[in-house]
Length: 268
Image (cartoon, rainbow, N blue to C red):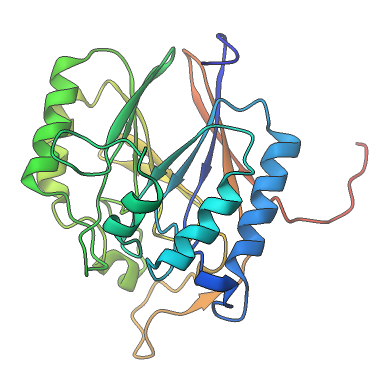
């Protein structure tokens, strides 16, 4: 149920990378970051209509990781929609989240109707690969949904179909981007926004005329290095953030919330 018929409010959170038994990842504990994000949402944004988590729910796709993720998620006071990413194991995910919606062809894809647009949650994962894929079966499902519906659309997916300018990240973006676009192109005027994960960076921009955004991951980020390096992709610990999204008939507004920022507040 939408709480405010004049405005849709939801949270975009991505890439928790939860580890089993709360084992540190790159020196930090992902579950603590997820716990802090959920505490923030429950305290500051409990009026949100839902939360979308765009993949890489766990780091190793193991049962212990999903058990810990599920335990933390049960604390969330807002309904959630879960996507899978390249670090997830779909079989383990299905076991721990049997009620997660799937499309007719069995992928973790679904839709949600809101007063301000149809939300489409896409599955760009392929077992054993870090690269984004969107196979013919999934494309057929998306094409069918777009043809059978009308009105505004918002898309959610783990892998971006576009380059962001960071070489290693771009190498793992959605490989079937052109075929994906051919499905979207006849409906491009309906598509209000594209929300992605995977990049572990704050991104705002447009792709072929569609507005897009991404949020930082919860545990670690991708360093802003725009030239290839023999060392490979570097990471850092810029603060985690989630998006607070406000939608009405006129606009889609995405606020980045640096929820672990403890800097002093003051009156202007």
